[in-house]
Image (cartoon, protein in one colour):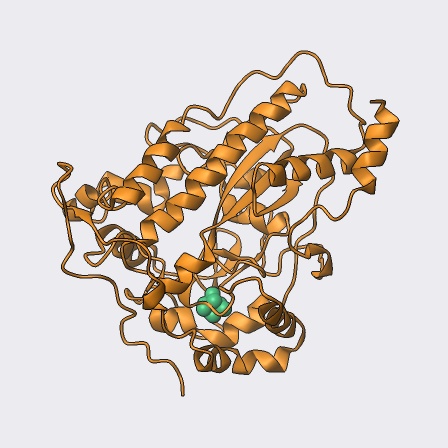
Length: 399
Ligand code: SF4
């Protein structure tokens, strides 16, 4: 096939993305402030889970952090798979560049099509901000020297039907996270290897081996806005019900722009995650945003949030804030209409939580639960039925 034919085919096929990302309002900068010159690169050893591993949150949590996913067998299986991907992130690029068009638009479209072929749920591309590269990695503090120009962000849905049936801090929460971590990591490793075989350097970054901080990449790649839950990015089609991996590369790619779907106003009015959080880690208040290392955000309490996930006695990890969020919905015509309204009619946002509860989304559909609650209490492979399973604390759906 000639280059001209490849070019033509790349542009003649139908829409690339499975969700209508073309209807989203594009803006020049993320909707929450980032003071580019003031953001310093962060050390991976300072993240909540790494501090927990180091013992900053006490001996109990230092011990629990190694078992809080593995104690539920499905979480253990998914975590095992993502662990196997740890050393599959790098390789040497082919010396022979593939005979591809050198148009960044065509290449970006092809990379997105490849990511969707590999079963990504959404993908976006941005230039890699220098401040999104870790300064040092966990555990040895090795300095990171990553100079790639572009970042391809891959996001994977944690599964709506499971989220609908789950409380959020029960036994399936850890597997929901690690389904997305292991799948996005698997896809990122393949995509990076493919790009290297085309003759461009590339590196995968996933939950077991990041050299980059993911949230700013998601913002710049147009995959969401910063929400009330601290460093979490919320996507208009998936809510916060996803995890992400990244491929960095020097392949010349056209970039996406950040999006604005009214989330700052929505989160200011909503607060449902703050009301439901079992550990009270999410701040209340429309104007409770703060500046942290050059980022404007609602600052959650990293220590209590990490302790809740690691030390949860009623399940494996915790994702109550994900499950209760009004943006956590299936992709049906009705919910597309509601989502359009939330994006475009600011006054309707005031009624969103009320409407969400009226529709029955304040409570999980326990009748749809498909998994068995099991716990490996002593780490010896003996499984027992746990006495407790999670609950949503004091939250009462509005009437
Ligand atoms: Fe924002 Fe409400 Fe979702 Fe929390 S639950 S992240 S406040 S939309």
